[in-house]
Image (cartoon, rainbow over all chains, first blue to last red):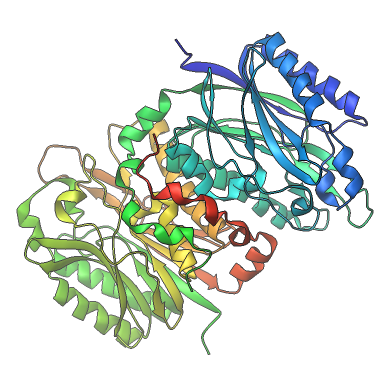
Amino acid sequence: MRLEKFKTALIQHAIKPSLNQTLSFVAAQIKKAALDGAKLIALQELHNTPYFCQSENPDFFDLEDFDSSIDFYSTLAKEYEVVLVTSLFEKRSPGLYHNTAVVFEKDGSIAGKYRKMHIPDDPNFYEKFYFTPGDLGFEPICTSLGRLGILICWDQWYPEAARIMTLKGAEILIYPTAIGWFRGDSQDEKVRQKEAWIAIQRAHAIANGIPVLSINRVGFEPDTSGVSDGILFWGGSFGFGAQGELLAQASSENEEILMLEIDLKRSEEVRRIWPFLRDRRIDSYSDILKRYCL
Amino acid sequence: MRLEKFKTALIQHAIKPSLNQTLSFVAAQIKKAALDGAKLIALQELHNTPYFCQSENPDFFDLEDFDSSIDFYSTLAKEYEVVLVTSLFEKRSPGLYHNTAVVFEKDGSIAGKYRKMHIPDDPNFYEKFYFTPGDLGFEPICTSLGRLGILICWDQWYPEAARIMTLKGAEILIYPTAIGWFRGDSQDEKVRQKEAWIAIQRAHAIANGIPVLSINRVGFEPDTSGVSDGILFWGGSFGFGAQGELLAQASSENEEILMLEIDLKRSEEVRRIWPFLRDRRIDSYSDILKRYCL
């Protein structure tokens, strides 16, 4: 029988000077979280590498070896018997790359993968250069701990993605993320941005009656092109329960293993008092498939 | 030329002992708000009557005369030269009723109406007995102050409704609402409910890059059937701007005219830094038209 309640760890960290140092650090965090009782461990977006999308540089396609990363995390998942959510730079074919979450079962096998569907392209976030938009759709990944609706960063701004994952049976939404501030932004703007980032994901929990976990980078990373001042990733990884109640939240400044408990039964409790899924006007939603209606 | 910035008033009030007293009170609030400079005034859900849906009683279909209400508010809109958002009990035909928002232009003409699309039915909120689900779809109402996306109460839990209004050109989302607490709920539950109610609507502002206004009842109303302990409406009417920034919020206990300023230019500013509409995966959203996918 599967667990209804289990400990979950969100690993929020800064990038290290080399790939090996980063991998060693992340492995140590996974070990620590597992020894602390975590059954589900989720990592931040593109956790192996610097957030290279701050500029467009063809050399950066070599930053990560996808197959090696899979071997590395498969071994860790098996060793610590945890379901592990990773976020990797997938080389699918020369010239065809994805921003891909690979989920490992506790026996080290690949439970499934999700290719980021919504790709941003804004100053310092030039992801359309690096990543082909996902072609696997919004499919929850079945694991021994339940069906995980993995979505990645920019996806978090799209209620459609959260909703479809839910309609396909997702029991938890998990967002590996890389978001931060620019030095030039005012303090007010920084507050607005971070609050908006929290509110929209909290709303996915509420609208869908399922828990939402978000795992963000922390710390400053320079723009290696020298064009901009870089990004100060704002951390703040969090979990919200099925009614939008805060489960736990990490700081803005520190590396953290954020531990929280997921209770899969909570969704049904919440959906019985707030049966939003019952009353959807599916006869009237077809315009949502349009780019714009004017 | 239309106004880009204008004062808006949200009128949060308790119900009075008689229809005439309520109408007089609301008229006085509208006058006060208009004299204070409001160009747009929005009222709470079913503001003329007690929240009669606490029980199922066929006599309650007589509580409001839709045509008289229209005459009444048309006169006020014209007298004070305001765009006025009302929320009325529409008798469309014997045995066919809607929960309908009627929007008046500042010359007193009807700018348009919206019939509540998502109808709840939960203890103390037996709306499916009273209201046929709306058949006008999610159509913004064109006014001299912009295109108003009117949605009503239960609609606020559905990101689909907010999104479709946006795709059809809405520039402001406005939610007349009637929501409150049950005496039996714990303090924690009350906090969770109210926070969720705020967060989900705030997220509609963020996801769509438009301001969101919500106008709620305040004060206790008994359940006239005597079956339950009634509802304590939690007030808390609010406005959020296009980035989800708080514009103003009313108290939980008091009648209030909540004044705030709408800046229609803000949407484009926000959407340029957060161009969510650009990247929607409309090729991959068709499952949203299903009740459930499993």
